[in-house]
Image (cartoon, rainbow, N blue to C red; front, side):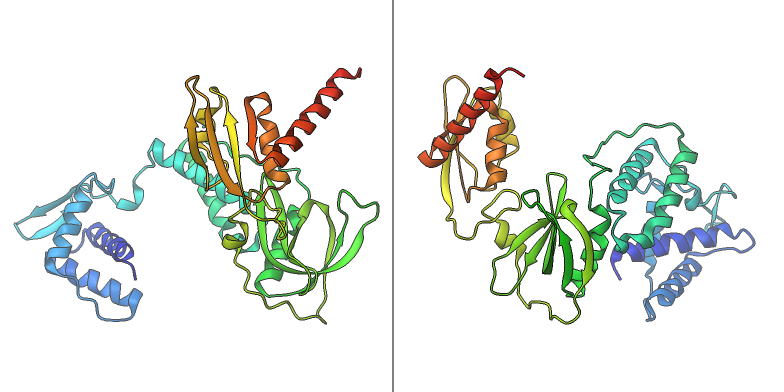
Length: 339
């Protein structure tokens, strides 16, 4: 049992003792009560020392734990609460506590589609009720990026269970490029989120490369119990270390890409790097910077670059530079055409 949990058990035990005004409590009595409480939780002898109990009382009296417990000594021997109605469990929530709890509840509710969080749903409800009772009509101070209308989220838990239990799923899937939906067997390895979309990563067959399927393109899910799940030691950290997003072309090599960023956008790129490999190569006199990243170029990376518009320029490699130039030329043509 962790030391923090041991301490909490001792604090609650001392609190429970001092609430009992019909008995006189010496330091030795409190030590014994704490030892018995720890034995009840741990199932083994764990004698609490005099020094530990004294420190616990001192901490409970202080502001450090937020208790400010009115523990007094009378007759130079016995301990009690000066306020007979006091208890550490009745401490009102501070505004900071309420804000932290509000945002924590909001964050945990993002994972409501996973069954592993179903056991805490009632706890979240009670927390929300407590927060509302303490401070009604309060506005959140943290807003998380979410899309409640995103398709496929209801498949999250089914796929999670399939991965954990190593089951082969039979998917009815329709990609953006396909005219008709197709039914395929799939061996799922992980679920991955990127840019507020969820993807299922795995293989169709052991001999085929790893691919990702967007959950919002899945129509239905079944299971194929006649097939054994592919036994593969898939390391997601290693697999995705050279890319941004979810698209990994295993046939491509990692390249060094050099990019110029203008003065107005340089601080954003410095504080929020494109990739963990990002380095500043040069800082221009006009405030712009030249950076480099080493990764495998994919659609996600290209879209990020395009999003900076005229504020960014690819210097090298020439192939990516030309590709970006062609895309901007086509974009310009779209604006020159009448609507």
